[in-house]
Image 1 (tube, rainbow, N blue to C red):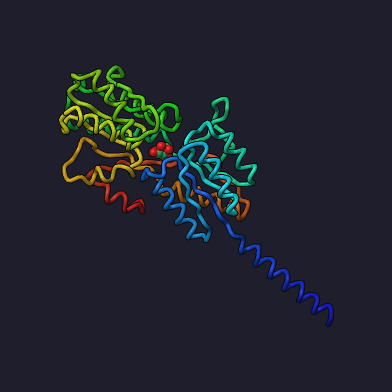
Image 2 (cartoon, rainbow, N blue to C red):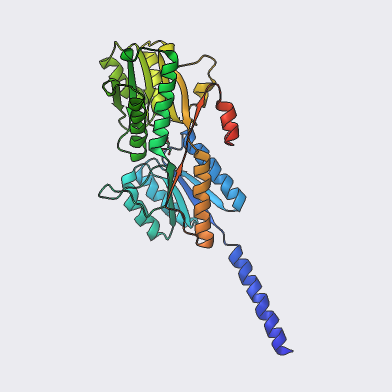
Length: 327
Ligand code: GLA
């Protein structure tokens, strides 16, 4: 009888302990470089949705510079988090961020901008989810060329204004993808004018970059316009407007699809024709889910996951956003 009691006591204790194990309070940080950009707002919203679905807490923090990244890592650790997802403000901070995560015993998944080490190589051992950048850039180039062909503009009179951001690999690959697609479809490389963005990729910095080209080539009659993301293309569109270039004589296509909705909703069309919609929501959800399962079950995340894009224009954006669960 006594041993039966002991047995049931042990059994009871085991139940309590397994209950405790299940109730582990998972918390993750979700750290993004430009929290004001809709792309990152969508990502964060879906990270939070993932947290609500699985029952864990997401601490969202904007980290526009290195100091704020390190502070955020210390803060989430002090708040009991076991890991974080990050889009770093500078990919060269990678080794420092990894060291800080280790010191705080935090797991780490990267999104959008992939860490590079001191020798400039990707830190492939750190899980990464991001755009299939070259392909998405190709889609931008193809969309521009398709629309250009529809409008029957004489190629000799067209310039390709391409804002660029080469210090970041994902954005360099996108603009190079666009160049590859355009030249393969017969656009002369000598009529492609690159406008490097100095500072952050924002509308004002892109406007300044584009203006340099527009001042250098005042006689170009028609422009096709691309760039690494929506804001860098919107800046170029604003520069064309500032130079009184006729709206109908330019075709601009962005990337992200999240930061151009106001533009597509404008009652009067601008030269901004469309964007390659990326999967910000999927990236936010997936990175959080990977991290959660890693913390909770020890499931190692996939090291390199790429997402695709889809053209949206004034005509189809509402429908596509609905289909992608992003409306
Ligand atoms: C970079 C850009 C963002 C967005 C993401 C997508 O981080 O700054 O605007 O394009 O890539 O991966």
